[in-house]
Image 1 (cartoon, one colour):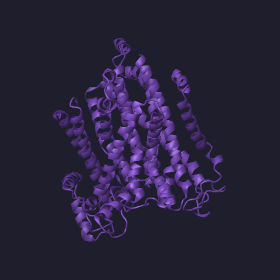
Image 2 (tube, one colour):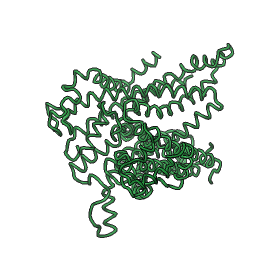
Image 3 (cartoon, one colour):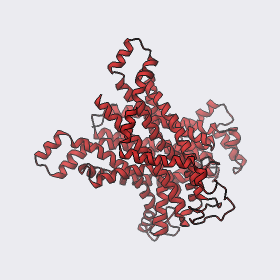
Image 4 (cartoon, rainbow over the protein chains, first blue to last red):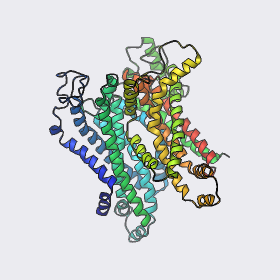
Length: 280
Length: 323
């Protein structure tokens, strides 16, 4: 694991990715010191639709709320939703992939066919409907992301387990009388753990996207600030017909930057993993 | 030659998917808190006799299994009842009005994205490590990360607001057309930005897939043999390499249909384009439950059919395919 880390830190794309992620993490942690106003502090106290200025870096929204404050505090919501759902869906994906790959048979059939079906169903409309009927809240958004976030992880882990299963050291452990559970968690899981890490990172990018999309059509948490919600306001109140460019460009740029950073780091981990696999 | 075994087994999976999707469409609205007879059918916008009709149509006065059986029959007969918001228009009428717009939008953008992705992918692989190749990788990762509705908003801001080249919303001008050509030109002009948005958001991932598959084929011995034989470059590039590298792209197209449909919904919302996306968005805001249910059904059916078409194409392109 520490070897992987050393190898990762030697790559330029990873360093760039880490720096960007660190940038957003810093914003989330020190939001109170970075933003001159609290979220919704200037609401109804300031003129609506102000252009960017020294007082309001990104201008104000339809209620006179400071958009820069919304952006900064939105980082917290976005990171919380993305991290939580990425960790949970990767966890479920690894367990499903382990079970399917290790046991095969009926368990594999059920899990694999479920994955086949979920790959065909239009997930975005389904997520919209689920979020709509479950009601708008952060936890429902996380639930809706997790329900479909495990699929890719499960597929990849399953195929990895299928090949690891036949390695001699697994055979050796079995002949020593190790139980199924012990083999799975003690001997196979470490083999796919760096892959798991890669998918936590990659799932963050999916989660950011879904959270933004749901917030954009008004299904986000009604209280929490978020980048998708900023874009929802910008669209609903016609920011593009008023030429309020900062309101539109900056939140989307944040979504894109964070997503690119996670994809770069995630792909780098997978890259190192596959090169190691080839050497085995 | 079509591989019947492959198509039959894919057909079965698609059929199972269809039943699971419509079952979810039955269950999900019932997850909502509250009594369905009051929530789903007691909308004040409806006259009392329509409410009676709805309760009977959805069997809301009966037990859940009878409801499900009647729901299945109604769904297969495309009988989704009345729209709450636009009573007495039926949901089926609304969908028939909107579906062609979405199919046009998705169809055109997918076609353009595929052609563009194919050509760029082939050229990037042929010139591996060149500027074009590097640019393609960055475009792909950025296009994947940028929310499709954000791309739409930026195109409106730049091309419609600042440069005033394209209209900001809707799918046609509110005027009488002088001729059919006038109508076609006007509609194309209006759909230019929505199509552009979907192409930008999707072409790079096709290109990248094509590039990666192509690079593997270029390493094959028969490529070196072809070169040694002195075959023309284009025969080598398109006839030998691209022809053999196309399968991953076909798989990706099948897998991406659902995603592109989802993206199209958001693009339609931003441009107020009169397709299924705006239909479902307006229905969400108006609590028009029958329309939400009907639209989700039609999107699912469209995606499943598109998948089946992709499977047939696949088995034509690669007769070896097994399932």
